[in-house]
Image 1 (cartoon, rainbow, N blue to C red):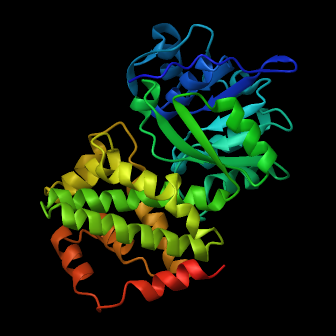
Image 2: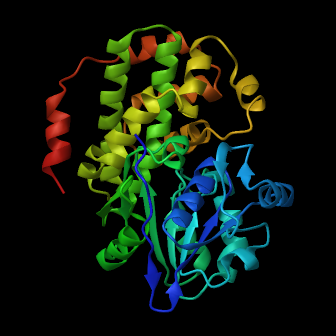
Length: 355
């Protein structure tokens, strides 16, 4: 069932302007969604050739085929043209390219603009989240929040029902963006735990790869369920140490996104894990795909962050070793299953009972 999205949202000065930074599948989808809400939308594509194709064809054949882009949507590789006058800037750039995009585009954005990161990842070198990068590169006060949750781009573009979490430290800002982007088929819940929402979006990709490896090894549904459940435990443990609310990981940006990414057929991260479990090499998988599976890079940054914070993430550790140290997937499973036996509840009670 497709739910129509027809609401028109105007500001005091007329139609509100939204700039979307990044023309992959998710960026194109969010630009299309914002346009359907009656907003004036501009879309930035890093590659001039892609921007030109999108302008001419009015369809992102490379990343989101089958969905026409409206004729009044501005599409450009020029940061100034895209950012001009935008009250809201939505960032949808892969985590490894996020800082470079921020350096390029932030100086062109309107003072006082609201910045929303829909990118899911942690920077390798600094372990910074995407909103942290925005604040660092802005060099001053900036309204920066995060959007995350179970949301395959193809389904959102098709108007299928979706619910996600929108987080800003300022509740009034969260409510404003919630009103701006919500639609009958795209429900946004607000949160003030920006750190928790961002961590959920980044960490779940790593555990989705683990679930894919398990499926590739044909280990069964029990094993997959165990990996997902213990993955949530690990995600919550790291979130708490990072100062986030572990309860956030029980919501859409944690459990919800992990279930989707670990089990959905459209999941790039699950597909990577599945192919590794079937015996393919990571280098061959990555070189043969034009789409970014964030979990491949995040496996390195998440494991580095866990070591820096001295947090036990055994599943994330094994995913890192399989991807980057050529550890056989079956051996990674054996090492997970032969760890010291332990209680399930005491660690969880400690986790949920503090803070």
